[in-house]
Amino acid sequence: MLYLLTAGALLWVGLLLVPWRPWSTREHLEPDKTNIAPSLSNVTVLIPARNEAASIQRTLSALGVQGTDLKIILVDDQSSDGTAAIAQSTLATGLAVVNGAPLPPEWTGKLWALEQGLRNAGTELVLLLDADIELELGVVGALRQKLIGDQLDLVSIMAWLRMETFWEKLLAPAFIYFFKLVYPFAYGNKRDSKFGVAAGGCILVRAKALRNAGAFESIRDAIIDDCALASRIKASGGRTWIGLSRSVRSHRPYPRLANFWEMVARTAYTQLHYSIWLLLGTTFLMSLMFVFPVAGLLTGSFVVRAFAVIGVCAMMISYLPTLRYYRRSVLWAPMLPFIGCVYLVLTWASAIRFWQGKRSEWKGRVYQRR
Image 1 (cartoon, rainbow, N blue to C red):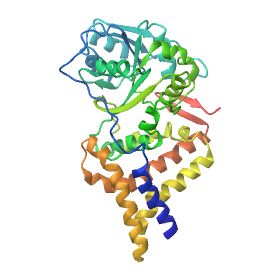
Image 2 (image 1 turned 90 degrees about the vertical axis):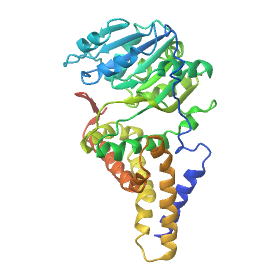
Image 3 (image 1 turned 30 degrees about the horizontal axis):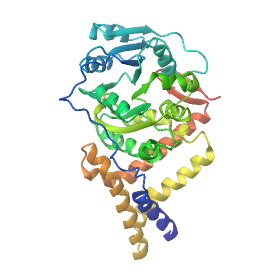
Image 4 (image 1 turned 180 degrees about the vertical axis):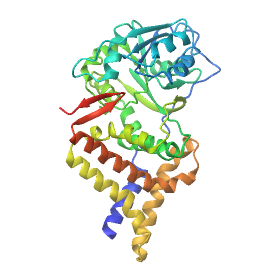
């Protein structure tokens, strides 16, 4: 018990000390709302949309005030809820709706929709935007300024997830926290790093770099398509950057645990490359970091409790920047061991789904295990 607790405590302390600081929120981007770009004529927004009637109006309305001459292509991916009609009634100008063709074999739906949209885009820059993402005033201009000013080829933003219900408040900040632990932003942003990190909800990319990297066909069957795209851009010699923002918000609801269950189960085992050994290693590591420190607090040994306190304190300290950034109470920090266990269970649910023959499932489409 002491050895396991010591290892767990050292892991948390080490996490606080590593130079790339994956727990930090220092990588972020906010627009200057007093300095709006006069023209966005070199940007085309590509929106893949499949049954997004509940969210598309907010997304398009926010785009309509970003600046003049912004081009928007919405690919209606065979929706059955009137998504295209709502989109056309929301924006009278600047919007083109492409009726998506049937999904070919070996393609995921989102990437096939983006591929069709790209064929109709003729601008220097392309903004890949999920249909549930609402941009505050000036975000597109700020993304363009970041990309051009820092001589980048791809800039992406991890959207602020909705945090209204209990489960959203409990699990949404932690989802971003764990994403940053698995995909450290600072390491991915390094000029000489080949590690690709991106968040698919909001990505601004140079069209030339995108096509040089093989566009969407090169990653056509990817489930974690954002990081796959960033890796392709880097492999072709491009530079990428990812950060947080309070001005890029997802309004997709996850009101119940079951909703998070579906979201995480869709990709968690993919992150482990469908490897049982990585799954078992992750289970051991998360138990070491989340279960043993709490269990150590309940023992009678002073030495064991001392290491347990070090581990728990370091754990909560690592979570505080995320809570502060998303304006959550620090009282959520003691819940992190429980949250970690929930996400571990969801990872196993993802693996079980894969073993049952389903690689992933989204919007009524099931991507079978190959």
